[in-house]
Image 1 (cartoon, helix red, strand yellow):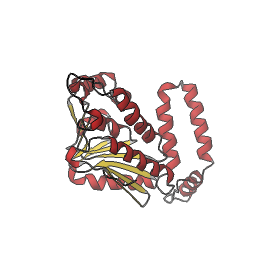
Image 2 (image 1 turned 90 degrees about the vertical axis):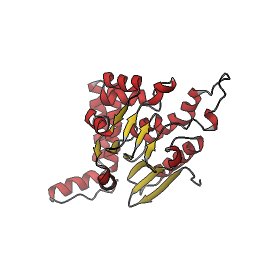
Image 3 (image 1 turned 180 degrees about the horizontal axis):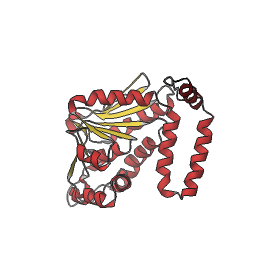
Image 4 (image 1 turned 135 degrees about the vertical axis):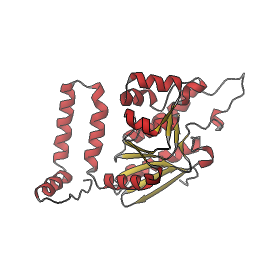
Length: 265
């Protein structure tokens, strides 16, 4: 597939996926959905990739849905588009694909993340934002509810009271406050942002990939499990990881007092 709405590159085990509609604040259209899904398929199929970095071009991360996209346009007084189908056909498979990716994911939020763009960032394992960035659950302003997993991510990250406030009031949440509340991992100075993103991506690329992915899976499963069920899940994952080469290397490096050289195996 030839990409017109995203940029995709792989180097040194790091896949970088950039939403590339800066004139539209990287908002989603139908074509961008297809391109994102194709790029994620490449990440899933390429064993040399150890981490995915997702960011936006220009001054914004993602402004959510492009309301000028043909599937969204309608004449007032006529039947509006089927918004449920927009979610089912576009955002639902995208978020599930991202959440089940075989490598850890890092959202590098370089500017405003609004609506579905905010939820897209929260679907990644770690979110690093520049201090000038912000997160906006803008759905209430157009008579909708947070989608793209927003109603799932928000209460788990910040608790019900703050999640309701963000969703019902649709106020802008600055990146520093988002980090303070636990919505994201960290907010850093704009001048340090790219260096911090690159360092964190390199660190994740050098980590034991399968252990990080199993950690994600276990944490996501925990809210629906009893303690006993979670302990059993942990045991199963520990058994699997304990038979992997990265565990052997990690123990050897610890004993030999050196840095481990994980391969993701």
